[in-house]
Amino acid sequence: MAKTFIFFTIIIPLLFTISLSDPNPNPNPTQLEAHNELIKFGFPIGLLPKNVNNYALNTTSGHFVVSLTDTCRITLPPDNYLATYSKKITGKIVENKIAELNGISVKAFFKWWGITGIRSSGDNLVFEVGMVSAKYPSKNFNESPDCEGKKHSSS
Image 1: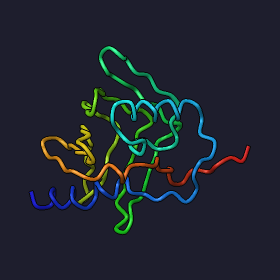
Image 2: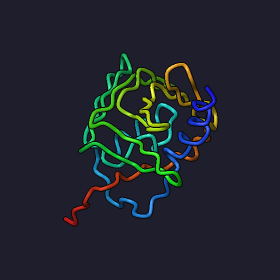
Image 3: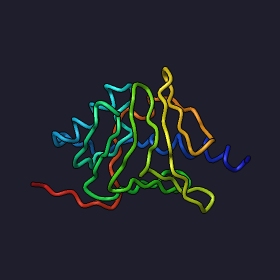
Image 4: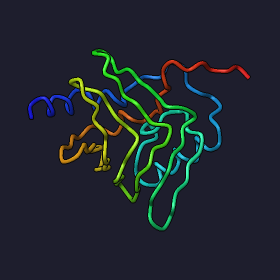
């Protein structure tokens, strides 16, 4: 249990506190729309990486699908924890809550941990991994991270 607590107090905050040295001045319209949907529901845009290709939202049920151009990997300093986004991220979003989340994982203690839910609580975000949760300042997620190892075209 102590290892799980350490995981949440060290790794999750690092997951989305990545400083961006190469901001994308011309994001695609779908990327902007998907990130704007997060804002409408009370979340910062940094919960999704920059490589959003498409998204769909059922406005009645709140179920969503976000498609990325490719899987996304982020190495989290200083201890080189690895976080991944699948090409397809699914879940259910309502005001200040994302549930049934699939497609975002972080590796710690030689094991992959899937983030299953996120709640927005004032100035904080509460991340859920199964029955365990951890709270972090939402300001750490104000910018969308770039994926590692991807070549950028200069078209």
